[in-house]
Length: 452
Image (cartoon, one colour):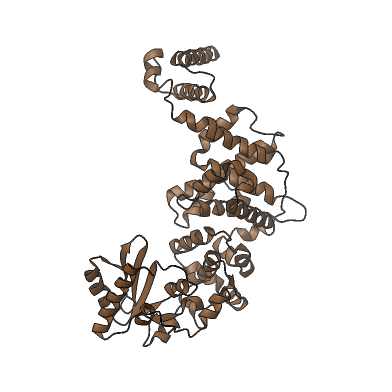
């Protein structure tokens, strides 16, 4: 623990002692601390948590933000900086053991008196053997009504398993299967938050979610996929989806396996926003890619995703389908550079996600990739070596020049000319303004002749 954080904890403990009220460090902070990991989010509980939080926030000259003001369950947050957050929650029950008995999983149901934590004393309060489960990397539900009290914990079990690289033990899996339908009562915003965190992990435990039936509660349409034939005689559409999803996870974890020259670009791309998770969400929906765009968007809206996230998933599915279709229609696909240019221009920020998903689908369907991988690399080569550098150079012809030189008004022809001139510039078939105007004149003349 760094000295500045220790001083903050000492000050907080002093306030607790002056009030004659115990304060405990609990939950995730203990889970992360015991294996020797860093703590950035500190969770505290005390019978007087709201008052302690108010006094300490004033002392630290920070704002106390209410997260839950339900009487008896008050939770407040104090943000020290982007890497240090203190949360204060009113003790549930009469004792710390009562409080821990109302938590979700054994690895989160541990506590240490703050004074002992500061002095590094081994006074761990662990009524459900969470430390043993932590040592054995097991997710185990706390005995009682954990899933009934908050059905989101059904999904959170897999989220913790994914992010911590643990396994969900069999009895907990059985409880999840028993209570799975109760997840339908949970607000979709909360479900989407957990799903994005789960899908953002290297391995998302889709097999366990499938085994318990939870995946069909989240995505009701998946039940039909289990009855539909797959791409091969021995598979179903659902098995194809699982195979493609597994291949995508492997590719995202090690893009250098197939796309070695472009691995740094891909890793940088995946690190932005939560693209890593959204591409995997796209893979889950890939088997139902035949659904019309409006249907896909409506399904995504049910999870209250942002418009930007919905567009990302929908366009990733759309352009991955295009890549697969055009590459299957020819032995190489996207043969002229103009076809690659159009794909890049139209797919925009979903280019890389579309390529990654299309590759995963081919791998998952056990289709030939002997020519497909070189095609992916050729598209990315063009993107990096031709398309991106061209964006830094000025256009040769714009709308103002087109109106002034040829007396054209905005129209479908107007846009078509500008698009074709820009394509020729990027592909290097024209280099000067004069050549751009000559091409525009030829395009206008050809359209006039067609009209005649």
